[in-house]
Structures are given as structure tokens and as C-alpha cells.
Image (cartoon, rainbow, N blue to C red; front, side, top):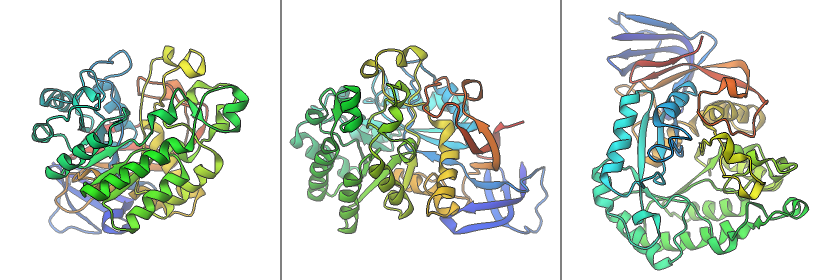
Length: 425
């Protein structure tokens, strides 16, 4: 099967391409990005005039809820939503039920994703058995089963000695360690950013120090062990500054930010809006602006969705008793495009934060339109306006603080290894 995508503005940040040209695909692989390719006779042509043609998006954090929480979502439902959002590669954390601490669970998730056929799903293996933070998991077996990294998800590892051993073990097998840095004692029972808003609402707060103390400990252990480490969902400017300094000093560390942290602050909680209950919490205006600048300077090399779909009931209790998380796959792309419009960052650099940036962090052969690579491609209508509302979302989770926002930019055609997996009417 030969496919020609013609006349689109091709943005391939990995290869410094940003021009109106054509993309040639043969048997699911990229043949060339060029004006002409001699001897190429297309079986199918896709006209991308006035549209963007980019590598399929790579999302570093998407909870698909299967296995164990199928009442919230399934791998099939969420990868279908991902395809509609232009996302072709997803990394899922290990806090499923059962937990991804055995090869069997990792293989099950990969099989379910392959059967659905909408997107590629990569698993992170649990750093400790049952995510209990005590006994180290069988990382070698998890890597052999296809896990691309190690994480303890949202569960803190309280004992620094255990964390040091995890890092040493992960470094031995050249597995990147995905860290959610939060001190559980300082977080305590908090559910919002500690500040004026938490005081006014009478909600228990999570101080900035809950993140910065944990980041400081983790950085000290990374320097001692040399493990490749990735900080997930940074939320504070001070935490980012610490990681940026470590990068300058040569530590092998990277960091991502969830898209909602670039647009929302604790002010958006308003009168106890549980859709804004996330972890880490929405911080203040200074933190949000600092994170935006970090994306622009490439100190933050990836933007993720931090997708956590929930059923309606999960958000109906009093704020502190609701479940944290946002259904975010379908807002990742338009929020990234909006960032390029609003901030000092080029469109090419913004696209890099959701393509080649996360792909390099996870060690995936994705996020690029280089010759010979899988033809994972999204075609985007950058001028298409749409409203975020339940009837417009394919994800089973409709829990979003962006409800009724009018966003600009939407995927209109998504290909996975050259096969159309989504096409918008």
C-alpha cells in the first residue's frame, strides 16, 4: 500500500522540517518527505492543504484503567480516544489492578492494545512489588516482557535506602526511572495547593515543599547512582529550577509537565469545583508562568496529558473526598497548539514537546517522520474550533475542567503504521 499525503505543512521537529511539502508512505513506513519522489505511484492520496502534518503524538502518562477498573474505561475505549486526538503512542503507569509487577500483566496490556489497533501502548513496570515501596520488583523480567521503564506510580517510596537500591538496579538494566516526587508526610491529607485559596475554602493544603523536598532527595540519589531518571508532572517553579540546575550540572534527568498545569491555577477551583482536583495540585500563578517558560526554554522537554478517566460518581463527593484526575487525551493537542499562540515558543518547538521530546525520554522509536520509520502520522486542522463537552469526547471519562471551553485545532486524520485509525468527518 502506497500513500501520498500532499500539500500539507509538514512539521517534523526531529529533522528540523517545517515546510509545505509531501509525505510518501510505503507498506506502513515513511519513504520520504519531499516535493517529488521518482517512481512513486500512490494507491491512496490524502490532500492536506491548509493543514499540519506531524508525527503521531507521544503521551508519557495515560491511565487506561484496564485491567481492574473497566467501569471507568478500557484500553479499547481510551486508545480510540487517543487516535481521535492524534496520539499514536501511549505510556501507561503500573498502577493497574493487578499491578504491572509481573511479565504476565505487561503482556496482557500489550495484547489488548494490539487487538484494539488504535495506538501503541507501552507499559512502565512497578519499581516495587505491589507498589508497596518495600521489596524491589523483578526489573529484568519486566524489561524482557516489554516494559520501557520503571515507576512506583503515585506511591511514595519512604525509605531512601530502598530508593537507592531501585536506582542501582534500574541503572544496571539501563531502564529509565519515572519519578513522581512528593513527600507523603508533607502532603499528609492535602488535596489542593497550600495558600490563600486553601485557607479560604477550608481545604487541607499540599505545600510547595512536598514536591521540592522529594525532588532534592531524588536528585541526591540520582547523582550517587547515575540512573537515567525522569521527573513526572512537575508542578512548582522551585522544583523545576532544582531539576534545571541538575541538568546544567550534567545529571541524566528529564522532566515533563501535564498540559492542565500550563493553563489552570488554584484560583480555578472556585467554589469547590472537583473537576480541578488533581495530583499534584494546581499551583499558583507564579508556578504556572514558570512552567510555561520552562517549556519554552526546553528545560521541560515533554508535555503529557496525565490522562485519568473517571466515572461520573467519582467527582460527586465533597471536594477532598473526590478522586483526583482529569480525562485529558483529547485536550492535549489543542492546548499545546494554544501554547504556541500565547507563549514565546514556536509551533515547531511546541509540536516537539508532544512528539520527539517524549519519545526520546521513553526511548521510543517514534515522534519523527524520518525515512524508514513507522508511518505514525496525524493531520491537524489548526483552524478548526470545537467545544469541549461530553458529546464531543470519545473517552469514557468526561471529567474535565475544560468543559465548555472553545479550543482551536483538532486532529482530522490519524495513521498508525500507515493504516487509517481515525478520520474526522
